Length: 444
Ligand code: FES
Ligand SMILES: [Fe+2]
Image 1 (tube, rainbow, N blue to C red):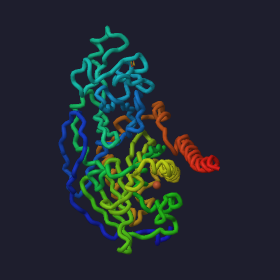
Image 2: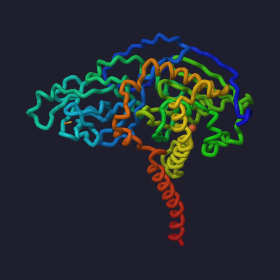
Image 3: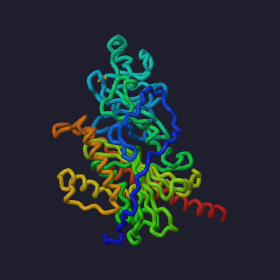
């Protein structure tokens, strides 16, 4: 890429912490809330443990435990009798089986091995605990009433499922010491009201390092080159790579980078916010006027395996009937899938090169426009060395790969969904063509 394609870092501003409004449904989960930060307000708060999106409501199946790994730790998400979401460590305390293949019956989680049932009511008077109601036979009540599942605090906000991840699941939710309010990671607090937008969503699985995908999403240069042919925006393609003025603002809860056209009349091109530990917001234009916002949540599944929850929020095409008629969802999904396939080989090979020690200071030279990427890595490295989340449930070459084998459910790793989407698109187009022809034939 020649120098024309490289924007220079013109302004670097360091701002103060913004006040965050919140509009969040609190669950009845007890939690202690204390802000213990000692970091200055113009420094991004450190740490890789805390609130994460682990999935979305759309992906939960009725009466079926939803399984996921998080920093190598297997977890299960399900709805209890009170309709609250629960996130438990995927380990039955009877003989250590997984709940995968089990069921959720009347809000009770049932182990597939010997049928132990777990509930947050019944004999359990403390709703923040999940107790074994009975195991195989009610004669075991005495044993069962002392058995509790290990869990994490789990919240449901705006169809997202969040957990407060510490790496150490507890039997009693009220024992968690929540250091950061969940409000600090809410899109509502960052300049747009979710309720005013419609959205399309996909989940994407990559066999690569979690942190590497975040880097990709903070990088605007590659949009023009790698995705230039795919992104349906005539301002983004290889031929119009342009130079921007960049303003970076660091606050306690976010780093924001604003890219403005050099031609002042054209205003803002794009605005990217990184909200630690795993959320990115990308605004097309100023947040107050933005018609289109992308929210990306990054999930560290296991070593070399990551999931991204991608949502495109839009102010246009909110009518469901018109959206269906124009096959907007299928078309959007086709773009999502293509964009992520374009990144995939790059991310995997970068991961390898990093693991081999090839991506080191002396081997790579960052550009002015990579400033956001640089800030991110500085934050990531210090946060990683502080929390060491991958060391909490470290795997070795002897560890079996059962969870890794079953976790890659979404494209580009699993192309079934891409094919399904293309098939559905083809059928919809055919139906829309056939309908007027049939109508004409009937009239004639
Ligand atoms: S291992 Fe779960 S009931 Fe036996
Ligand atoms: Fe990309």
